[in-house]
Image (cartoon, rainbow, N blue to C red; front, side, top):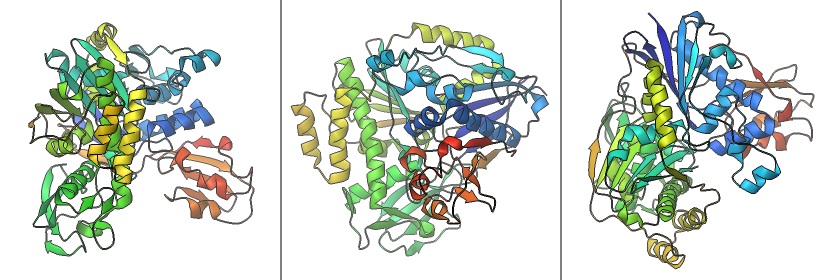
Length: 540
């Protein structure tokens, strides 16, 4: 059997499939619950690679992919072909391509620093050309093209696989995740953007949150002021679970399936149902101890409401900014496509109600993981790769850099006030109107929902799904310091260990990166220096 691997390198994790190259059959699927780089979002990953070196970041990526391939059950000499898809930052880091042109938004800054845009066209190369992949002596690496240097292969996958280029309606497609890629089509022109929404939509930076995986709460409904939990089973199907009193955790109706956390879709459902019920009145939870109880002692806190609200606000601000760039109103968007794990498992009607879908759409279409689909297509067909390159070069696109876009910034400031400070929705609308921006509103009724797939990865293969809770990547260095465990004590994720000889080991996938650095601040100056970190080679 000739074996290949199709890989989606996402900001919040990796999804990969072992594929028989002769038949095209999927044999096995492996997903990770984290990205190997420190931090929970794409900006953290950029910061890590820029500050501490592309080589360090690339080593972590490659080690994680090697771990995934080993978990798929493929020996190095058996692998003949590997394909990757994802956003430009993740794919560039994996290949060792400089990312300075992605890190700096302003053209003047780029000119001052003499930063040139890197080429990110389709290509097929020997794996040996990528540092760390020399262990696959017989394998080729297939890389899809970006539309522009900042509009990557994942956005191309979203645009092509959604089918929204064929619609005559003004439509928007969104990959709901940590780095939410989105594209608006209006009168034949595509407007693209990417909102660093943060990891709450993937269940991360939520106290009891987890990525979409078996035995997580993926949906909730209120039944007579009690919360009905819905949990993903081993096959990632949503099944009815316990009925819980949300104010104290009492089990009203038991069920055998257990839950280990809340996924991003569950977070969205909790907020939508809670706001409708009135138990959530932004930014507060109206219970005696200001938290909601779910099954198996899982809780949802006011800080979770704020984290999720900021992510949802970023999505709505992104949609508004694209409409502003196209010179249209948000109400003109009539069709919405949802992709990615969150976009597949979330209740689209609930997402519509909380503003994650433009309020006036007539139909929402859920399409699954488009990035992994494209990775599989180019793994099996070189012709498909060059076809995608031709499509990418022909797409007329206008990229809106949200980091510098006035419309996005103004809208997001208002969203922060709405979700985090209790500003009434009417006032949010008033401020947007005052600034001359496209108007938003609350949906009237429900929209039509068309679900093309039941799972973000519809086919798992005969060998099934394996979930890697830990990516297996480590950073290490030797320190000379007093015998104190301050760095270990302050780490919020238990990512640090130190042995008797002063050898530090940091689990990179657990580390919060640029948003934390508590270990550095807790230690004597110049002692705990991340500049001294190296990637530890470690097998699965």
